[in-house]
Length: 177
Ligand SMILES: CC(C)(COP(=O)(O)OP(=O)(O)OC[C@H]1O[C@@H](n2cnc3c(N)ncnc32)[C@H](O)[C@@H]1OP(=O)(O)O)[C@@H](O)C(=O)NCCC(=O)NCCS
Image 1 (cartoon, rainbow, N blue to C red):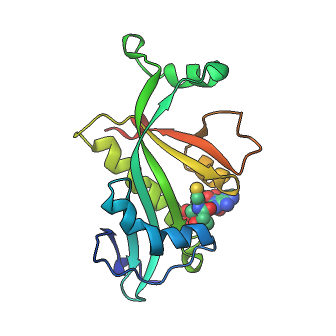
Image 2 (image 1 turned 90 degrees about the vertical axis):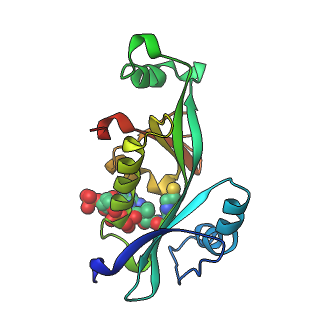
């Protein structure tokens, strides 16, 4: 596999989407049927990692603005987050960027591409100076929770422990130069 032939690009209205299958029909369907519509109505922006030699989509993710906020039933989790924020700047909500979707093609799975994609998002948003953004959030499929934990994400709540997805966050402060 020639990683030098991989390139990132943002999806646009006329982007031709190269073949992709991450094994999840919803995630595949979003890329082919919905990603451009979400861009059109300004609800999410999708990014593609492409293998130009093989003419395939290696991975994709989409991003949208978000926030994390205090759940009064989950004070201890919130205190853990708040401890990293200076006393005089503690609020009941903080700005975030949400990973709306993330999929790695089955052909390219288990090669640390998912981890690399998350690292790219961390680097971009920890250096971004256009607007304040302290956290990355994701509603992780329950079977992907260990993947996100390996990448430094934490669960936001215990309420969704038996749900199909779990709310998770990453503190971008760890990536700030
Ligand atoms: C989950 C997914 C994004 C992981 O991408 P990937 O490129 O295969 O993962 P990586 O190779 O970067 O994995 C990084 C580490 O997490 C581990 N990991 C990856 N997926 C895992 C899983 N489902 N369960 C446990 N560990 C996992 C890897 O073993 C690796 O560990 P290591 O550093 O000790 O070697 C990919 O499998 C996928 O697209 N799955 C289907 C869709 C999905 O679940 N998306 C997430 C939606 S929220």
